[in-house]
Length: 270
Image (cartoon, rainbow, N blue to C red; front, side, top):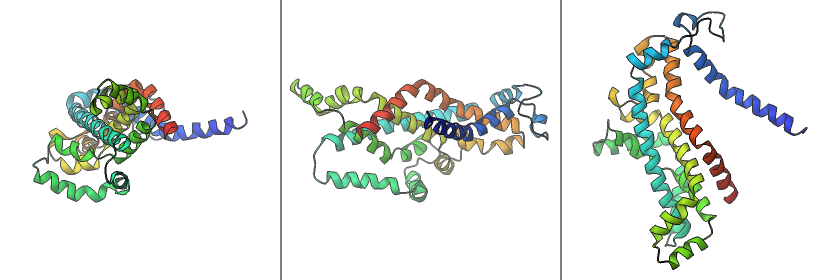
């Protein structure tokens, strides 16, 4: 009991660090524009209003940015799960020359900062004619060595007897992967999928570099233009930010149970 109390207080303090900026954004977004800059600052609005949300949704580009972010984040998540799970299964179950060296090379990708790859990636997308396209934003984000590592460690913990039983029934290697391994890996796949979706949704640098068409801007890139579009209208800026983060809350709320179980299972089996 004595040990739990300091830990609980520490957890509460860390939670407040994350929650206060979010609470501040929501509080500002539901105030009249004139009250957002009033001194002294008030936490409880004197007049509660959703006018900022109405103006953003009807006169701004936020709905378009949300659609673009949804397309890009969903595309990155689906393709990353497909590529990373196949690669992880190959490293976990197949034996081929240079396997350990190749896996070490994949893991070495973790140490390469994304900023160092911006210029060569942009030239590559330009040579393929993918600048100012959804594919130009999606494809460079598919390289996910961390996800390959997490999935491999989880696949290593699955008993091979299940696949051996399927092999006796004549199942191919791909069939074992699809019908045996993947159904048993739903929690960790959900965890990897949520982390990938959140990372792709919040990615600002690469979409900012590869897209200049306003109709293709994602939420993080579009929010950078809100100030110039609305001037210093803080209520509308905060309403745009809250709307931009709302889909992430919805996704996590639906998959929270699987994410927690997936992270726990991956840790135990790692």
